[in-house]
Length: 113
Image 1 (cartoon, rainbow, N blue to C red):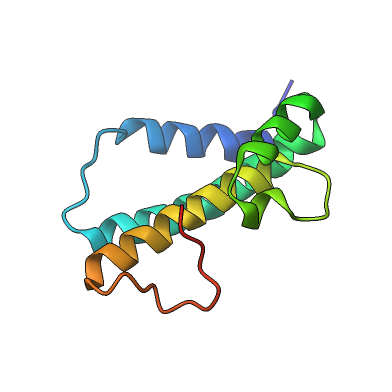
Image 2: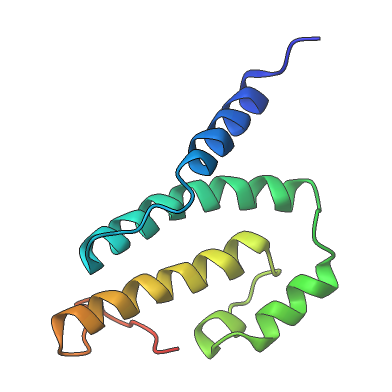
């Protein structure tokens, strides 16, 4: 039986990422770019995790309840994508703020975690 193209794409992405798992970024800028690229991958993986109900709703609710107010107070059902991508975005903002020395990401409404 031949795999669906989407299954093949996920397997290929996993193979590529796994082959260079221990790559070390050379600078904060490279780390930010890596995390931005990871955000795209994470968004798609989380969509599938949510669509296939991999994580129990109670677990997602606990994660959202423990999150910072910007995440915790969103009037939407909890999802893996929302919780994980929100934390990833916060880490990107933190790296940018730390690298420019001002503590400011340049983004309006950024959250401090």
